[in-house]
Amino acid sequence: MNLRVDLQSDIPIYSQIVEQVERGLAAGHLQPGQQLPTVRALAGQLDVNPGTVARAYSELERLGIIATHRGGGSFIAARGDEAGLGAIREGRLWTIVGKAALEALSLGYTPPEIEAAFALHMARWRVEREKGEPGAVIARFAEKQNTIILTGSHDLALDLLASHLRRRYPHITLSVSNVGSLGGLIALEREEAHVAGAHLLDEETGEYNLPFVKRLLPGQEVVLLTLFHRVQGLMLPPGNPKRVRGLDDLRGGGVRFVNRQKGAGTRVLLDYRLKLLGIQAGEVLGYEREEQTHLAVAAAVASGAADAGLGILAAARSFGLEFLPLVKERYDLVVPRRHYDSLLFSSLATVIGDGEFRQVVESLGGYDVSEMGRIRSVG
Image (cartoon, rainbow, N blue to C red; front, side):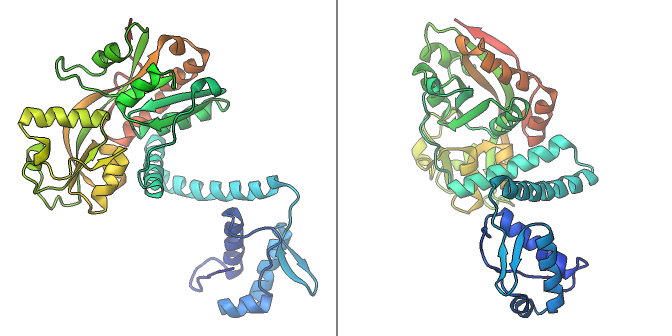
């Protein structure tokens, strides 16, 4: 057991020891039955009075966290129920999160701003842990009970949507997978999802999503529910050392670019804008390097592996990057009518129509939620 105490802290040393043992148990670093150092051994390790350690052990025993056997040492208490351990873990988590939330509230931040910031931090943690790997293959929705399968274009707000749905309807799960806008529509055509997230720009009409839905889902009755409009732009390292001022600066290979995968709406947007500027793919250094999500692109730029990537403001914020806005686009949820009219989807629609969810999405930055919930029908 590796404990440390701050001798200069206002918190009593014995309380620091108690807190660290509780934290180790909550995190799973300490297990029931694990033996603790003797009072004298831990006092020597921490360079404190043995009486201080004895007081800490006494408090831990009173809390039921440890059990002391005379002449046999002290052990993490063996519990016959997981509920006891779960209560400790849950209590610890509420303390940590509650302290951070109260501090933010005291500084004048609103609850939606705090939730959005927390979502951004968790999203960054996930991409760093998973190294941008795509999600698992989507299970057929017919095999799922009380689960809405949403796949398609990546967006941080979808995690918030899943969280708000779970909070309001605990028995319903929103399963989100990132396969790109085109991949999402194909999943609908194959009946592998209930909903697809899409932001596909049609070059001929300048319209988002509708032309692609008509081509890929012919003859189907489909509802397009607008989730938001969002700003896409170039994510750049702090200070913008390459002095990038727009997509035209990608020409010639002086700027290392990181791209999105084929079929992603962001990739379609990039190709369209490069075409307008007369820039060939071969003129862009890094055009062939592909990442699956906005966050993975942001991570590549933040790590110094690339000088620029196209993505959304929220992803840039989560990695502390500079952001050069380029275009505002529509992001729709594409839903076959048979799923849209279901009781299961009505729960999701209720959450989308909720003002609290709207506020949190807006707090992410770069989102226009004025048309959130607007529907258009096809077929």
